[in-house]
Length: 83
Image 1: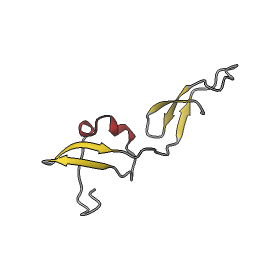
Image 2: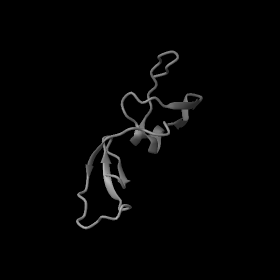
Image 3: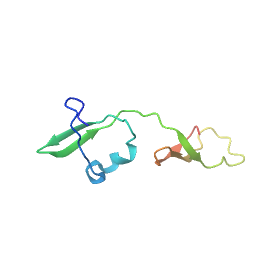
Image 4: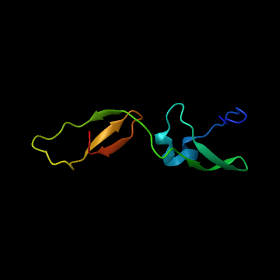
């Protein structure tokens, strides 16, 4: 929705590309358009998301820089050191 005139703007997953996986309800993004077609998007520099699932820690893996996959609330899987 355009916050200046409240006009609804529909964008497809193809329009958004890789940015689509980071969208959450209520998130405000900045979009640039040329002749009605989207050119680019600015997402927030950081987002606060909840980790919904991680793999169990391996027994004996006490080194502080061991990374493991973590699934976020939006379904994105990231590598996490602190999970």
